Image (cartoon, rainbow, N blue to C red; front, side, top):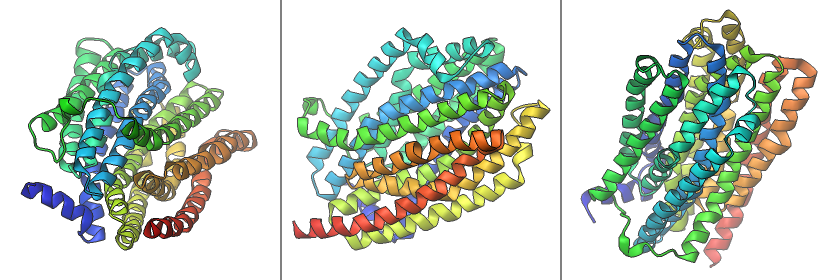
Length: 453
């Protein structure tokens, strides 16, 4: 084991909890914040076209990328959880086997996604809620995304697998490089080649491709703790079951989140295309705050999995408290910044006074959820990390199906557009309370069961 490998293990096993959360979470967060630029840069340059239909189309198409990430998450999150637990239990050979199988499953899944997306492109665009002029623009964007499925899904899955061993810096480098490429390529394809929204889609796919190949370079150059091997290509039923056990519930969470966005877009469409565009711009800006808590929570996941695997429950509890403190305090700062700078932020992406006004309303409503949803996200990641995904899935059922979608419909009927944008903050507060109570109650049972084994 190299000196660098020793440092990775020390961080997961012995580092001060606050420092460990920051050390593991910040690189992931920085990388994911650069990923925000994928959406923000696309939205910014599409906004410069002064075509509200293309701006709305970029919002209608967004769930397709979420679905791809959700599918890739079966392997990325399921494999990462099992790898971290294997490392904690000193099962390095099984961790390497899991990594290799993860690569195989990602490639197979991306090919299936591409074929299905191309064959059913028109029904998919209809389902997304796009109509009229926005339909054709949405179809153009979505078709290119499906053609680049391998790169989008490989980028997410391989990055998750890389982080599972504590290689957060390498993961960050890959994500940043892909985003910088996207920033450079966007104006080139959109304006120089006059491809408009098609150009934005091509730039996004190429950016994902660059990130994916950088992750592959780190594995091939033997800079990682674990490495895929041709000798381990044989599929193993036990490992696949472990990956699916965590990965499928996590992916269903993403599907429910995507379904909620589609419902929200369809409800907003009744108020006109400009309001869809305004919510779209607000959502893209909100992704900055979203990726912060997701990055910190994802960075914590290997820490939780490793210490659960090594049965160190005292450290696990300290890490949970540290994670909550770091995420909540960070998101409160972000929320305040969004509130103060809402108008200039929205104005970066549209010159339409109506889009700006409604976008400011939507952003100031949505920002209220950040501290609550951040804690809920951490709890779900903890459950996935320790191999208890159906608790995480239960939280998602409560969050999306029992609370959010019904509240969207109810608030929309009672208060119109205003109710629509305030439904989620109300839902997230209720869900956070439920998630925290569930976690501390269930953790005691897990500890008692594991220590008796």
